[in-house]
Structures are given as C-alpha cells and as structure tokens.
Image 1 (tube, rainbow, N blue to C red):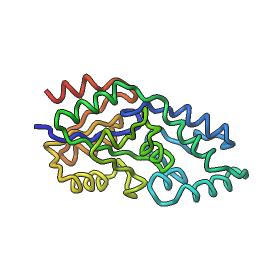
Image 2 (cartoon, rainbow, N blue to C red):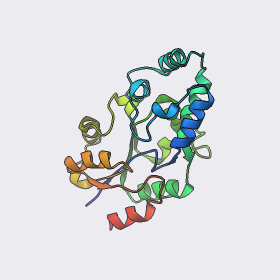
Image 3 (spheres, helix red, strand yellow):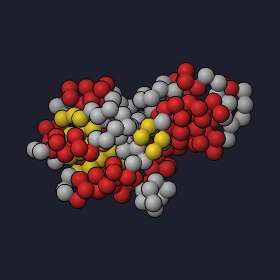
Image 4 (cartoon, rainbow, N blue to C red):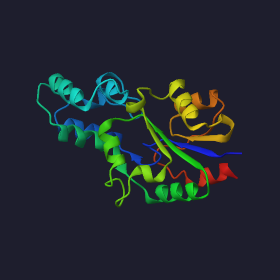
Length: 205
C-alpha cells in the first residue's frame, strides 16, 4: 500500500522551459547557451551550482569570467528562472488533495538556489510557498547530491523513515526512475509537462 509520494519539480510540479532558459541565457550574453544547459541534469559550472559545490555569487563570478562580461545576480536569476515555463493550477490542486487524504508528500529536485529562493517565497503561487504543498522539500543544491545517484534517494528515505515498498516516486526522467526502481521504490514516469494527475490516481487505486 502506497503511503508516501515523492515528486520531482521541473516537468512535474511546474512545466519545464528548457528552450526558454537557453534563450534567456543567450539574452544575457552566454553565447551557445545550449552547450552548457541540459533539460534534466546540469554539468560543468551549471552542475556545480545545482550540486551545491559553489554559491550563487561564485556561479555569477565564474560565468562572468567565461563570457567576458560582468553579470549581475538579477541577470543570472532571470536566466535560470527561464526553466519555469508554467505552473498549472491542476497540479497544485492535486498536491493539496493528495496531502489532505493523508499521503506523506515530499519533493526531490535537482535545482539551484535561484529556483529554491522562488520556491520558498510567497511569489510561488498566489501568496503560497511551495513548502505549503509538501511535508518536506529536498533540493540537490542543499543536499550536495544529485539524481540519478542512489545516495540522494537513500538520504530522503532515511530522513523521512519511508520504506521503498510504501513509496511512489513521480519523475519525468527515465534515468531517475530507473534508480528509484533499483532501490525498490514504485515509480511513475509521465512525459515532461504532461497532465500526470489522472495516472497518479490510477496507480494509487
């Protein structure tokens, strides 16, 4: 019986705008930004930020050096938030409903402090923070661990006291779901930015 739900963020809670992010980074002066950015797992300088190995200031400074132009914190934030394409209200309504039915709800995301600041703020959705939809938010930049590595899943299971057989993981990445499955966690892997609310209900039946 499923008692615990672990949700991915980009592509699941909010619609992910990879092309929009690339366009914004190019707008602030990062030529060929598509070479640096990935729809799911960042590498290089961008990966070091999401892996919690460098701060926003270090990211800003190092990116400025790479492109030969001084960037501001606001410009970097604007570019990173290009990943936030849309926030479908149906998703948030379903999160509220599932939590009201007694499911333990946590979020597990590869992301960075530019996005987590927005998630923790009341700018997230009509004066509510993302925290208000979940029992706990787990972010790669805080844990210094990233999906699809096993350790980040183990960390969440241990911290929450979840047993894999009672836990469902919802993520649009097949790589992430494969790791979860290897640990005995049930998985649902909807297409990114799709309506997963019906499939989740079907699974929970």
